[in-house]
Image 1 (spheres, rainbow, N blue to C red):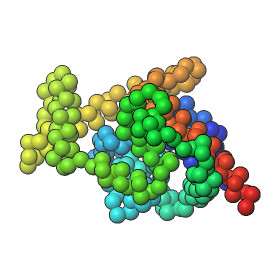
Image 2 (spheres, one colour):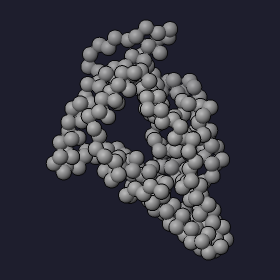
Image 3 (cartoon, rainbow, N blue to C red):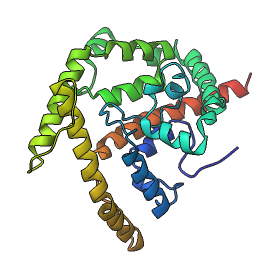
Image 4 (cartoon, helix red, strand yellow):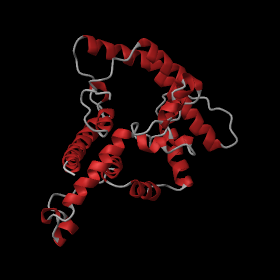
Length: 261
């Protein structure tokens, strides 16, 4: 069994995804890796989907054989070059083991009076009102609920195709309006497609132009022991850690119960 620092349960991988710059078991990005990613951007395989945020959703990707678009384009490109797609066929032994322990913990605690909530608390909750964050809600459901419930949740969150296309168009117009110069649009059968594709190509070109400078700063900070720049993921990381702490406790207690049988 491979042991990694900072990883006790499978959900820890999702936490480190949100704090990737400080992940203790990843080596620094190499020039060859940067060059390979630049090749990916040039390949045309890149898919700029804002709803891709859960890069470690191993369970979903393992069951996406009939829907390859559900797997991030970067993963598919990497697999096509290194032949690593077979790794998705490997069994999730650790995950299945944790699910067993979680079930044991629930059996032990489902009838506990301490776990019961009064009707008023069930409706209003004992704490302050919380905002709804789709990403955090998805993480919570994936961590503590069944596969079927997660499928229902994802189905309920699907948006009509027209709404999705309109959102992509608005994003494309926003990108082009901030370009500060005229951007030549590619030929397309539909003007919306031309705008969306043109904006994506322009965005990719700007990323490629700036990546070397970002990488230089990254290396400078590493060399001088300076923390990497904070990101929008910091708040999400704290929320993930809170849920994972609870998950880790349930797995640990469930293991004790299973070992006693």
